[in-house]
Length: 221
Image 1: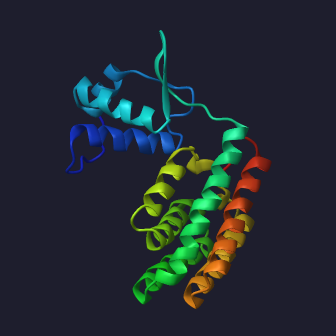
Image 2: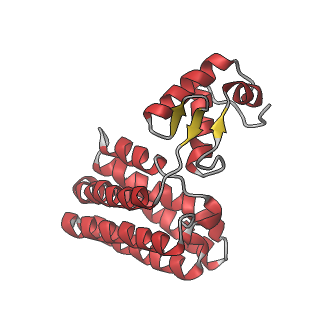
Image 3: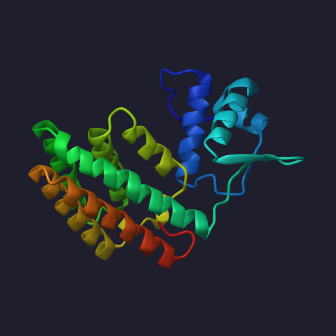
C-alpha cells in the first residue's frame, strides 16, 4: 500500500492523480504494462476506481489498450517530442502575450518571488529544485493570460510528454543560468505590458529547451 497521503477527493481522482504524476515524471516509463489489480493493491483501493482512472488516462492519450496486453503507457518518440515542444511554444507563448495585458502587481510579486528563489537555489547548487519551480512559473503565466481555458490546456500539453526529473536540463548549471536569464527577460516584458515581446521571448525560451532535449537524446529534458 502506498504511503502517499490521500487528498480529499474521490478514489478515482486519487488514483488518476497518482498515476498521472508517475507517468508525467517517467517514474512509470513508456512501454510499462499497467495491471488494474496490482495498482489497486498498491494504492489501497478497489479495482473499480483504478479502471476509471485508466480510462481517463487513455482519453489523455497517456496509455493505450492492446489485445492480450491490456493497458500500456504510451512510449513516445522523436516526432512526438518535436510536436510537444512546438505545441508548448504556441500555447505558452500566447499565454505570455495575454498575460502582459492582464498581469497584476500581486501576480508580478508572486512571479518575482519564485524567480528569486530559483536564483538562490541555482547559486547554492540546489539544481534539483529548479525543474518543478520552472513548471510553476510557466503555468502561472499561462493561468494569468488565459484563466478560462489556456492554463488548463498548458497543463494538458505538459502532462502529455514525460520528463524524468533526473535528466532535466535544469541539472546543468550552464543551462540553468540561461533559463533563468530567459525568465528574467520574460518578467521584464510582462512588467512593461509588452505582449509581443513576452510572446516572442517565451516561444524562444521553450524552443531552446526543446533543441537542448533533442540534442541530448531521447531521455534528456
